[in-house]
Picture 1 (cartoon, rainbow, N blue to C red):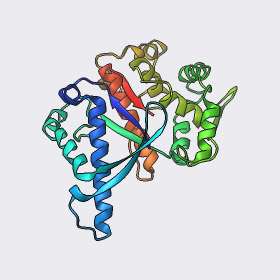
Picture 2 (cartoon, rainbow, N blue to C red; picture 1 turned 90 degrees about the vertical axis):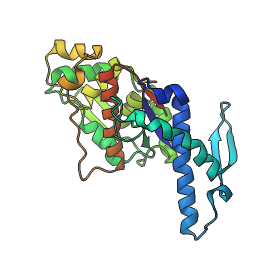
Picture 3 (cartoon, helix red, strand yellow; picture 1 turned 45 degrees about the vertical axis):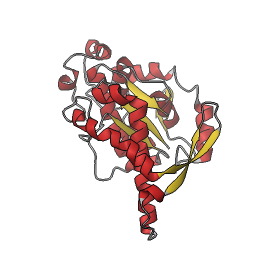
Picture 4 (cartoon, one colour; picture 1 turned 120 degrees about the vertical axis):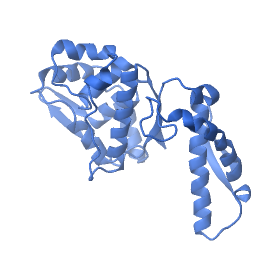
Amino acid sequence: MAVDYVIDYQCIPKQKLGVAGILERLKGRARAEAVIAAYREQGDTRPASQIGFEFTQSTPAGEQETKVLIAQDILDAAEELTPLEDHCYGCPANNTGQAFGCMAQVEYPLSKQGEDWLLKQLPPNREPLAWLLLRQAMTHVGKQEETLQALRATGRLFEAETASERLFGEFKVTSDNLFEMLFLSGHLRPSYAAMLLVFLNAIPRDLEADEIMHLSDSPEDALERYPFLLKTEPDDDRTVVQLKRFLRSLWLAWGLNVRMLLDV
């Protein structure tokens, strides 16, 4: 389970297979390879054409549907990706440097370290403009807090049973609020992405008021003028690494003036 995200930059692979088609093949290949590896560890040397596994997914009606899939069939379908991979190298939306690097995941459950890290990126009141923008944004979140609290009890989305929080004088921000802002607001438009990048210290925010307000316009030279600031550190856990990668993808989407597509 994960948040899947895609930089909505049009390209030949997306035209050929569609975003859903590419994601389905990438996930299927990873799943089939993991199943085959597990069998090999147990000494099972059967060919992939004889290895089956159950896969459960939700139907559009919200019901659970279980299918038996053959590993070789999944790998054969994924081979349709191979002739398209060359289009990814040199693509401005490629965040990872690998084939289909405009697509990635933030895996569940999110760690407490990851939730705390997000809160630490928020602007303190000594950065008054960014702080005021954050306070204004907070008036539009919190509507899904009860739902997120219920999901916490399952342990599937978050490791921590309770949300982390940070006080900002007259208002409070929780990690549930940030999850809602990042992942539960629909596909992320460039103007909204600019706000998130400022809040989470992903781009410089020591700017004049007029300049900050014009970030939502996604200037043509945005990526050169406003470099991405977050670097992977040795003590980052999986969630922090993936959140930083997500934010860098969001930075690229903003600079290219395209949406970030989300599947939560």
